[in-house]
Image 1 (cartoon, rainbow, N blue to C red):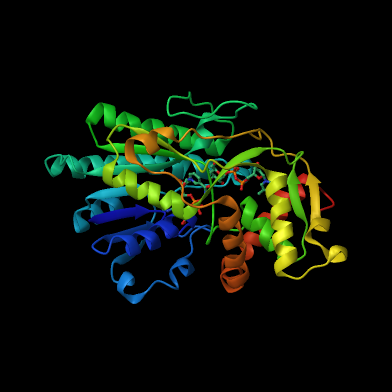
Image 2 (image 1 turned 90 degrees about the vertical axis):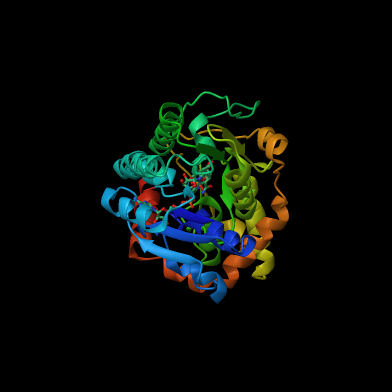
Length: 359
Ligand code: NAD
Ligand code: DAU
């Protein structure tokens, strides 16, 4: 298998590459990534030598038509998996344009290049274009119900709107041109190498550094959490056995309120860092003004992928969260590498915006 992975230096992409190189010894992966603030080659520092030989990194932008055409003709890909995106909701609120450019225009450019390449090669029906998307395209749930593949799109943030738009282009390329595309819509991932702007790693790092733990609104928004390796296995399953034109929802059956997760993290860190009541991480919790357009609840009905492809999550939330905390405690060098000047500027901008007293 010659696989193109876009956005492979980010959180899920780099986990997927490491996972796949280990699980599929015959596969070669070309990783095309623009190395934005979220992409880090340090994610591959521990890749074994035999895996390194099957991982080819190219620094480049998915909007770059000339580069895309060149690498498609150089490598003759059998499949593509598109992770490349601007992925953080808060950033999309403060600066939406980059989300339209990468998530919408970028996805369009890869689709267009893939279509030309596929047509030139007599339309092999084994070719796959897997687009990695999000449950956020479905909007917000009340107390009841689940997102199904048939749920209407109803995005709330510029991020989810841009992902929704990209999904529609992917479906259109299947319906109009027959390009064998598949879409997956997944819930919140957590695990190693997640950039510390997202809830779980931000809380871990801030707690270690004795900085405030900012809880948006009342902390009762609900997300469905999936350990990243379970997501990687689901994506491998879909790329190998998924049906073109279909969408698969992927979830962890693990709904939690944010405040519940933050409390679990405080308990774990107090235990690992031997913190007593007087200097407990709980004392760092601060309720701050809410995210505008904040979706209240996400929950996934993942029965289709279970029934049709036999995938279901293997990791329990409690065990995998502990594993994640331990990973960050053991990889503070990685954290320091990715926390560039840009990161510090972002934290200041996002959280000062919420509370002028934030220091
Ligand atoms: P991430 O922000 O950690 O990584 C994104 C990667 O894309 C980075 O390596 C970045 O350098 C690269 N990139 C950005 N713009 C690019 C461009 N123009 N050209 C080439 N590369 C570019 O994101 P993630 O959390 O790993 O998410 C990966 C994908 O999965 C995204 O499409 C996201 O929408 C989707 N997703 C994420 C989650 C989650 O919980 N993190 C859940 C469901 C779906
Ligand atoms: O549902 C899938 C999506 O999950 C992915 O498509 C996105 O790429 C990914 O970023 C994630 O989006 P969320 O907005 O759900 O994740 P985030 O980690 O930003 O926030 C999770 C919850 O925690 C959300 O309700 C907001 C809240 N939160 C977040 C941060 C960063 C806080 O209370 N405080 C914070 O500082």
